[in-house]
Amino acid sequence: MLPAFIHLRALAAVMEEGGVRSASARLGISHSAVSRSLSEIEAVVGVPVTRRRNQGRKIELTPEGRLLANAAVSAMAGLEAAVAAISRPRSRNGVVINTTSSFASRWLFPRMLEHKQALSGIDVSVTISRDVAAPQTQGADLSIRFGPGPWPEAGAMALCNDLLLPVASPGYLRSLPPGTGIGAMRLLHDRDPGAQWRDWMRAYGLGDSDAGSGLQFDSGDIVLRAAECGEGVALARLSMIRDSLQAGLLVAPFGDKALERPNSIWLVQNPGTATRGPVSRVADWLRRVLAEESLRPIPVTPLAIGGAWGYLGRNSGAD
Image 1 (cartoon, one colour):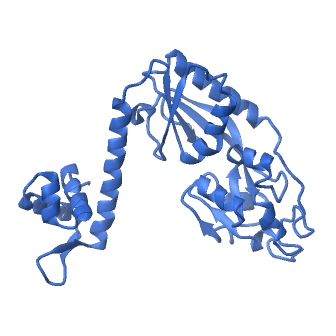
Image 2 (cartoon, helix red, strand yellow):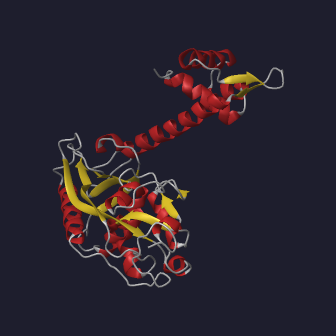
Image 3 (cartoon, helix red, strand yellow):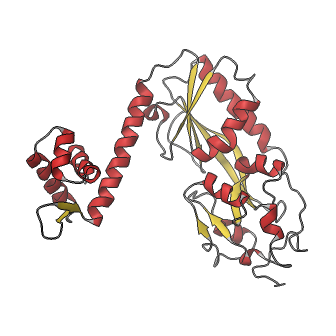
């Protein structure tokens, strides 16, 4: 059970304003109303969300209260963004695509620039979200999702397969001693449940005891940027790294030893706008370009790793 939104708003204001009195002034309600909201929250969650500071009259949030307040602030920011998205004026030729920041920066924006002629006359806007929600609730015409599906929406369709591929910068690989195996490399991780090291290691008979070691990052784009900067080896979707492989920013130390992810990229359409001409054109363009790219070979550049190109051993110097 969740506390009422009005009470969560009061808690967030107390955190941001530093006290009940300042929060009440910001919200335009009485001091006692804010205090009641805090009491209502505590009754629902079963733990204190505030405490007296140094036995005085002023209060501060407990760790639990701060955790809940931060979540409330994030939720309200999301609501404000959604209201702005659905209420802003849209041109007759406007199309809004919702996707992740990684896909937008690593695939979508470069392809939009490359295929300007195919999108001529269409104003494509991009919104960013990790949440899996119907596009109409996000003010979008099209949503691009990742995972095996199937998704519940009637307008969902699989666009293409994808591959998971270990990649690193040339500089990082050249810094490794001869005979370095995957078990001695620094692994880079993100939150994508479909791109986990344990799956790739199991597929190549390496077990997964070391699959959780290494550095953790919050998004795929940050992981890939870290890999490009020489921080270690990332396990990435080919759709996200094709450009970096072709540019030589990343290389595949184990060649084409990839893990297939069937029906990995999906397009979900807003039923209210799916028949609009510009939306149909953008949807067709996404299907065509992703399908074409999925058929291309992996851009593999030979690079000696201390004289042991493609070595999959777990430990440095092992057979």
